[in-house]
Length: 140
Image (cartoon, rainbow, N blue to C red; front, side, top):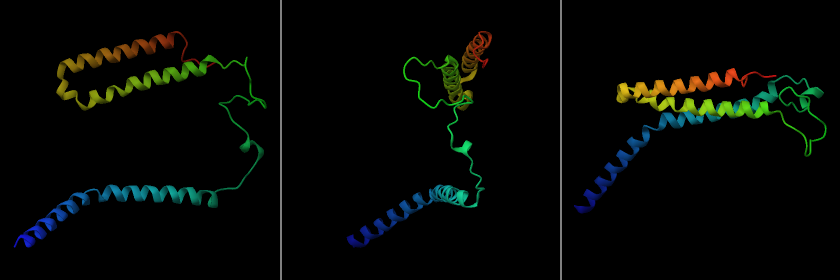
């Protein structure tokens, strides 16, 4: 009697686990489909794509600047505009990430949350206006 009860309990637990894992089947199929598409695209692209090779395709391209044949060793100056652009991107990108939690919990925060997000966006606006006024967004 005890063994029959143990077997039926084990079968019931296995059925619950199978039912729980079954809800992940669409996600698994989506990953398989994405992997198959990536593999299909990577393998068929070179086979079916145009084959127009020229010398310019194999040369280095560095943001519109003609590449030098020799690397600059010591004393070469990199324009500060690259660093300013990167820092501004990081600054505004990270600040925009802070808006997502507000968007998710805007109802729960109420009026206090609205005031805080308006102050946050105003700070962003002042920083943006300062950078714009100082010419940080002009690419020369």
